[in-house]
Image (cartoon, rainbow over all chains, first blue to last red; front, side, top):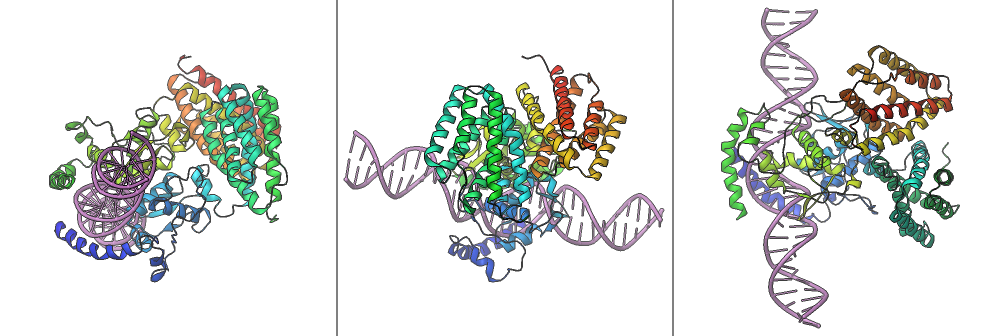
Length: 288
Length: 288
DNA sequence: CGGCGCATATTTGTCTGACTATATCAATCG
DNA sequence: CGATTGATATAGTCAGACAAATATGCGCCG
């Protein structure tokens, strides 16, 4: 019974395989447009250029698909409550195997964005259940210009956590952490935020600061916020050049932390973030 | 070499399949103990009893496995940098299919806890790359008594975010949100935190509050923190009964928010969290 | 003798097809 | 009219083969 079917499948495979081999390098994009484009899912692997430090599995099929679906969900192509086509249809029209498709769905599900149940299908969950603080999700968010409210919310979160973190860091930082921050600051001074290296240094600065709080939860949040900062910085750069030089603010924060002055660190950090918010708002389209 | 082993596996499978059918309902726990317990991975599906509000896919095989592996990684059974056995060995010794195992790994990977690369294997990443703010991860964390430092860190985070959130909520809450909070508070008064329903109401109260900030990022953080609160509350209950009644504090926060008094809301919330921290510390084993 | 490139082995990644479990919905029976 | 049962559709699991990637070591060349 079973064995025979497998053999028949095998024969068919050898035929299909040749086809696939031909366009394996162009990532089967062609096959998408030939005969079954009516399907709602679209799939263009390895979309993004700049990979970001921790984009994880982007080259893999399931990773790329998860990325695309994630972006589409965040972008509103699929709304909460929508049920996506069943696994077989989806994987067929995307021209990938069910396994790869399922693994992509698992990734999304683990971020709380979809929910699968037998006989029902895979449903997009309510927006407030999404894990938008997941660094990957946040990255997806910035693939399509996020709403102004969202960016404001992000800055509000920074405004709440980073000053407090700076105060804690002033009390708890180790000498090594001071050195790392000093080094990062120096790089920032040389490179400015216009270059990739400069943005990296900025990230390193903030991350070391959060890490210096010796608080795991805060450090984890830092990764997320760091990603957001990096995206908004890039965003600013894209729309207009920076109106003010943020380096002196960073230096002030650093000095306060170095001399262990918690309240000064809090205050300087607050003004730093507030200024960054202003800059970002100025460079946003005047939609409101 | 390898091929032969696979074919032998095939033959063996047709035999094994019968076995499997017999005990499919008792979730193959028996087969774990029969002949191959030497394998480092252990797997006991559907471990936890209390499922929590959003435990997602716990009944599924991949979900249960991800849960178990996650707990083991968090618990230090696998340390950062460790490489787990390859997929074939792992899935064989767990007596599950490679697909299921892979899906479990994808879940873990999407939370930043492991990293898979061909020829290398699946490696446990550095602890500071884990997404410990993911609600699921946080839940796993509390399966094995977390360290005191970790819990303190969590409260520090609450102490930073919740008062600020309360202040924002006081300014932005809608009438409906006030009603929801009032209702939750009433339930808490009746049930107290000793019952599941009371804890649920507590959760609802905090969540609605965070939601009332109209800040997506904060709301998302709330889900996480809410989970943490719920776990620590349960934790407290387990070790000793509550030393103080937290209901009046909640009521004070609520009243401040109702009348739109931001600074009062901030202050009351701060004292509420601080008190919760004290209670939790009192009920912790005096390890320091 | 050292560095560089290539072969190779190992491991994850992808594909395929079949079968199972589960949950909804409808029809049927008490 | 309600509960039970069966049909059905869908995700979940399984098994085996093959593809791609990449660290490692070997051999070759400078």
